Image 1 (cartoon, helix red, strand yellow):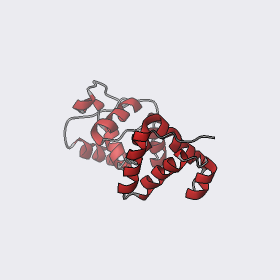
Image 2: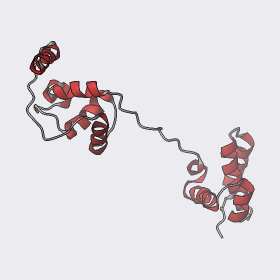
Image 3: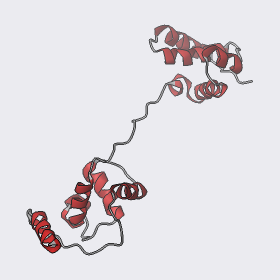
Image 4: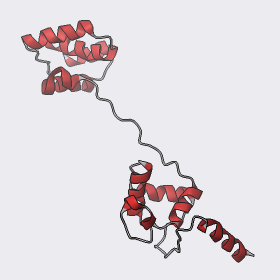
Length: 171
């Protein structure tokens, strides 16, 4: 059987925390340690608090490792940010040269997945893997094949002119 071992000094701190807390979950964790130190078995505590025995054991182990500080809840930062770019925005980005983005610090003329991951991190603030990037492209219907030389220009009207040329080619 596993029980929490609480020293005399820690017991007074535990009792103060039990009396002062307003958070029900924190109170439950403290009470589990308190009752466990009095000799209540893990199975009985799990039934009393409607928890799994593994959770009760985890609380006890965490208390033994670091006291009340280790027993406190840790909060995760939440779900990662989603990619907010549309298919048209991705295509527009892919038509530009990576060397046009100063923060990427590259002289490359063609995009690689590694450069796109770096772009997403630097300019969009989103951490993404190359595999996830490939999934996004597949979902949007953007073909990611071997790099081809793309002609780009610093001219702000370049995209408009390129679209006109494409329209004329179709006619």
